[in-house]
Length: 279
Image 1 (cartoon, rainbow, N blue to C red):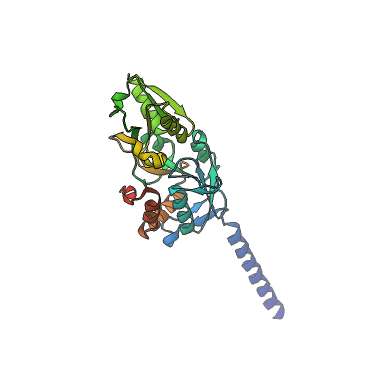
Image 2: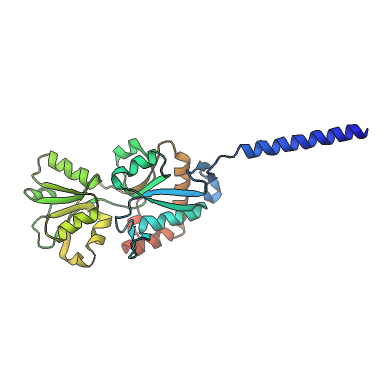
């Protein structure tokens, strides 16, 4: 009888160990669940416990370096800090040149691109785009005494843009359509504004959310004379198929919007919370 009891106990212990081993072996590296009850289900990040963000740090007020030249600040930076905190994840910002930033998310260098990405139909075919979180549209900025009042007035003049942005594509379309303007393309939008301030270009075409910021204390010397009819609100870009992570990030975006945190960040960088009223 004692032998039977011992055998039964031994079998029970083995079954318990096998069950425990099976449970541990089934967990996925880097997996997690969204906050607020896990409404968006399980998701995975490239680095366990970390939300990696591809970002071009050089586009105020969305993302730029503080006065120390090292600390990233800006609307997108603070928004993603709040989202990562709501998700229970660490935030990693990966500074990436704009011309390669979307290739980076496709090759798993980071989980998401958050860098003043305009929602366009073309991008929606190539990437998984989130709901929009900031209102935006291409605008034209000129000196206060300029006679330019519309895109058509750029005939025979020059316009500066950051290359491979929606403003660049828009101006290329106008040039291809017969507008006789010289298009000056730069790696950074700040270089375009430097050209304007130095009088080496007649206008800058850029996003409405950055135009006033770049002019800074000199804003009174310039004016916005045109805004595109077709709006291009700002969104986040994920790799195609990464729907679970997108849903989790959007759930946390909803959380920080409902709590008033997103409005607080908007007021800090834009002076108004109206820019986040995009739904």
